[in-house]
Length: 178
Ligand code: FES
Image 1 (cartoon, rainbow, N blue to C red):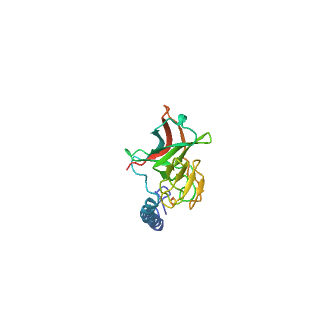
Image 2: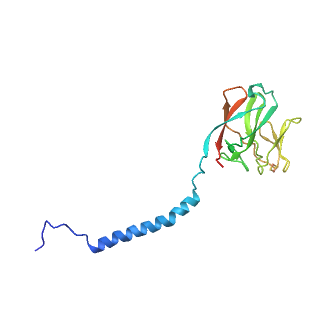
Image 3: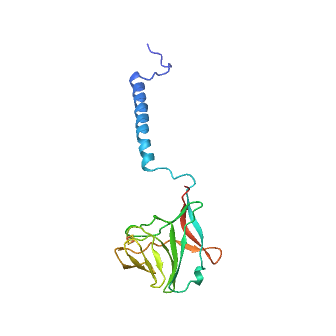
């Protein structure tokens, strides 16, 4: 007669089932984890999003209508601006390494330097009051809209606000950490 108070032993089949489950789970994790890390790598150490302080050649409040000033992203540490919108080769969230603060028809805007065709840096054509792309000839109005193709989309905007002094603006960006 079995002793009712004796501890219940785990059936051999149950025990083996647990071990099989543990081994299969471990093997699956070992196979899948490297794929997940490859698909979604951790951001490089030191990468940080936030406002980037830019000192302009001229206070943004003193820009004349039809005037634009170019600025570049800091390189120490290596930093980029984050586009707020975009079309063609540009999209919201893409990086830009330069831009223009521009006053046009009384409105101030900050635009990314990247041509929406294939991403070359546009240059200010001060005489014509346009942004011209040296790569394939696209031209943009000072508000970023297309004047001549092949670009079919306007220049991207950068999100910005006035800094602590008249010549400084804060532009949304990211310290790349490399
Ligand atoms: S990259 Fe600007 S026109 Fe092609």
